[in-house]
Image (cartoon, rainbow, N blue to C red; front, side):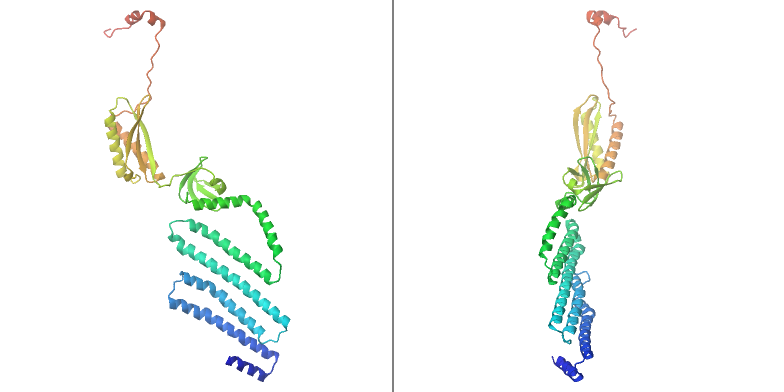
Length: 381
């Protein structure tokens, strides 16, 4: 207060000239520049060092996000004081300066809120989301951030228009009708968007799962987006499925409820085979395989069962579990190789298809059965 009085005394001594007003404005604005410099280069870095806050810490991010808007706000405020205090303004000019300063303050406030909100979302996605067991927040947060930040800018734009004395009621009504027209125009996109939200929140599939769709399309999920889901087939082709169709089809997920895949092997042996011996041999083959093979799930166990009496063989099955889908192919191959080798060593025959044909007797055989039998050559001849 004393310094301000001394400044006015000095000005009164020098006279009320324009260059004196300019010097006073320059002194006020220079003070604002000095305050902004001290705040930006000394106070905020010193506060961060004093509290020993990490650069990735939430408090550090919040402080850094408001540092620029706060510095700019100090400059705008001191600029307003440098014009409003020293200069002899008319009421109209003063009103214009006040309105302009309020407009700049409103714009700065909108930018600050949007920047602060974006910083909070970025911090959560970079620090907190990787620590969660679900990937849902990593997929939802970018969209939510865009919507929230866009809403802040839209609301801020309406407030700015209102500050400029522009009637926003017709604009709001027009935006309502325009939004309805746009919603009808992009209905397929919105349908895919909401279906993508359902797919993501449902958690039925995730990246890396092997799935099969109702139409026969199958492959590994490489990305679940808001508009479409992309899978890579076993032929190394990319299939893009709109989420609106993806949410309505029947999906078989080979990675759920756990990645283990059951392996069923069907086989058959001749009717002369000792079935008890067959069971012991098959059980030994499976027990040895699941202990030695890294592709097998030993905890699941191995199972044998007889299936049916077929035309040429007695059918049976072997049942084990692989660790995942890729492992199921190599495990089934090894099981077939070991079983074939062991059955061959044990002289257990896997028959070729065999049929026994019985011919109907001729009319001569029906009338003279003994005569026809006598015509057959004897074993001694």
